[in-house]
Length: 635
Image 1 (cartoon, rainbow, N blue to C red):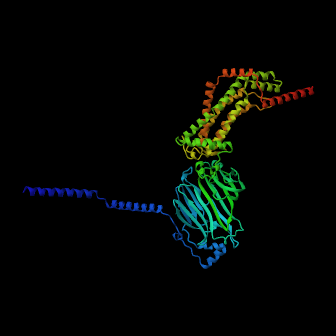
Image 2 (image 1 turned 45 degrees about the vertical axis):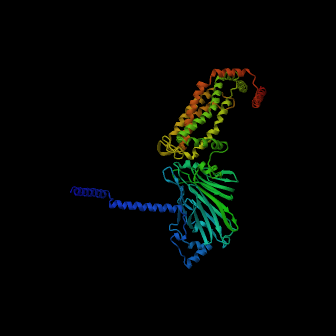
Image 3 (image 1 turned 45 degrees about the horizontal axis):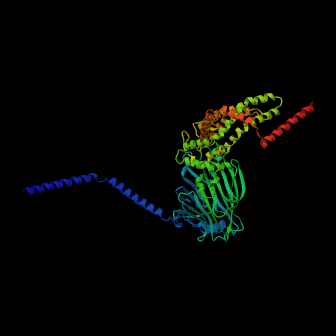
């Protein structure tokens, strides 16, 4: 009985547990909406897997993949043949519905015009303009790229008027876009573009097959490339200053057309042509042999920056192509990307020479010193801090120059009483005063030139940095303090009007740099004015220095208001450091008593004149004798 009772209790327990489990399963079961969402997610996952699988396969498109197939009737075919001859076949071929072929890579979004076969749009995916709009190198018909050629039936045709049949395929990881202008299925002119992953250089070739009887090889075939530079920067005038057509010819010579005005040139043996748009460039490179000749032009499109706000310059290039066995076969490269030295140098074609680092020694200093140094510092420091650290290193490197300048000033200050006495003694004989002054300075080893010459050593560094900061791509759109972009001007106030040469805004870094320059020149030039004697027949250097104290800061304030804020930051920090170095040298390093003792020792020793000093002494002696002879004749 108890056993039976136990069994009944167990059965009831199991029923209760089973019921509880059913209830829990019911409570946790998905709603119809959740079931639908799960199905949708699974479907999306399947589609994503299919898409990924398809991307790993070779992508091939054929003529059957395109819609809008045109069939010409007999009347239309006759009209087409009368118009374009053998290329009437191309007018009866299938084309894409929108007339364009779209391809995308890691760095590009490209659209090809099926009519004309060339790029209708080039978008750089990794960059934006000053107002966060994507960077377009080619857009809205700002660029034309076509070939003009003659045919055997005495026609002159241009590829921009003719339809190309596009196909897109894969060559390993590369994407190949083939645009064919057909005479038949086996006879065509082909533009072939091969795009590599994460690469701004497009392998581009122009080739023909089976057209030796179609082309008129006695008539020149010409490649014509035109392009307007699209504005990308905050100040179009500043951007236009660094927008320039640059080219390499005669193996290694790099030249440029006019920076601001209109210009044209005919050049030979052209290796590459760069349509530089400040921080972005469109470059045509010859891969097999140079262009024998090129006619190039540059037209300035910014006459009034309040009105001309869309384009900077118009570039054109016309290059004859050579036939080989009656066919065309030309391998080229098309670069659309940043004007960045590291990126351009990787192609080993000296494309980085299109960047205006400065000529001669100035460019060498940038390439050998400042570009590697800044690249190293910015690798682990914020860009604004990297500029400050580089400025400190440069000032330490040039501190010996400042020491030489201050030492020369100290010597001239100590000699001033004696120099004043000489001028007073020979106030009626200026030439004699000059002779005695030079003799004293020579004995004491204190010449005004000894302070100027070290200063001249700073000019190459000054100019090199002046060229470095506006062309440093790494500074583009990098912020520091109140500056949004170290490659452009910083703005703390917008003006309701435009001031000629100044602009329509107020930049703070140039103001700070101007203040620092004023105090530095006040401290250094003021002392030079006090010790600088006025020589007979020479300009009043003291008065000129006085003007420079005010002119230099004013020039900085106005001229640099539209320049790269990174450059103004450099000058501000540089002059602050110069003031500090000057105070340290003046108060703790140069001891005027010791300098005076050295001067006295130097004066007591016989001083041998160098050739220049001897020549100057002889000239002054001759001038003195001529003056005395004139005075005797007057008497």
